[in-house]
Length: 188
Image (cartoon, rainbow, N blue to C red):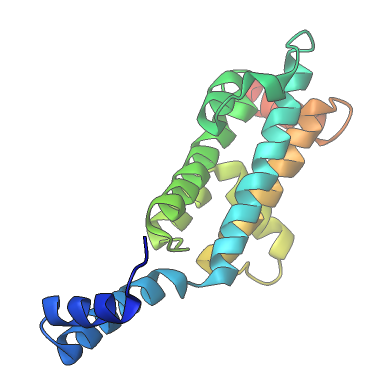
């Protein structure tokens, strides 16, 4: 079958209401496409990196807490499923899980609307993890840590990675946190 492409082009222009109407329609569609394409790739990359980084350490903990688990990759667990499997492991994982779930929500919003955005509400949710907020502020003294939403997100991801890595290796930072939590619990 031979198609007369010149005829097709002329007929499409005619059915569209003329060249001007077709150009307007195509420009409008292109503007909508470009709006979705022209996102803040730096923000998107920072959010995705933070999420993937935390997921790596969540998986590491899951395997460490359950050595007979088998091949975790074959299980194809979602991020949310992994969180639910580790969150009740200890007071530490329970405390971190609130912020980790928020990080997952931020990443999911990115997947659905293609916009790399960390809101003030997201930032406050991450800072509600009191051990993160307290350590972040103490480490920044005599200055103050950045209040930039993406910086807080990345700081939180690094904090979680460090804490979960420590839990997977019980001879490190996790033991010190556990000791301090136990000391605090004994005082109350």
